[in-house]
Length: 101
Image (cartoon, rainbow, N blue to C red; front, side):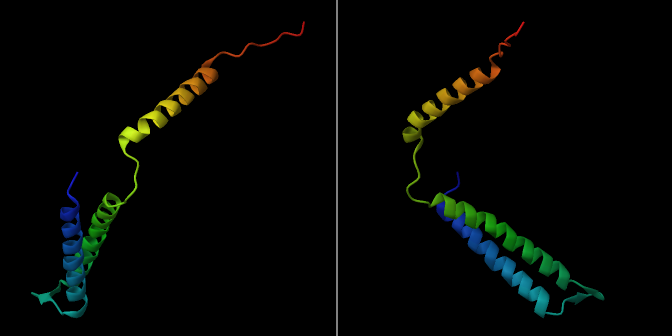
């Protein structure tokens, strides 16, 4: 897992670079050799902002308080495993047909 601070820095930098590229692409006329490169900056800026959303989700989900640890889940997992095994055995068990003759 990545450290929480690293993910936060990634998300903030992606937001800053993305919004900057997007605004430059919209407001600054960028013609080189008769070709307009504003659209390239708009699209790449939007892509960087979308990438930052993944960073924000990872950072936020890594900082949620009160999650149950793996040790606390072992008892519940064992109960769920037993229930699943019992249910699957009942489903797999061939049904006996009753003849009425």
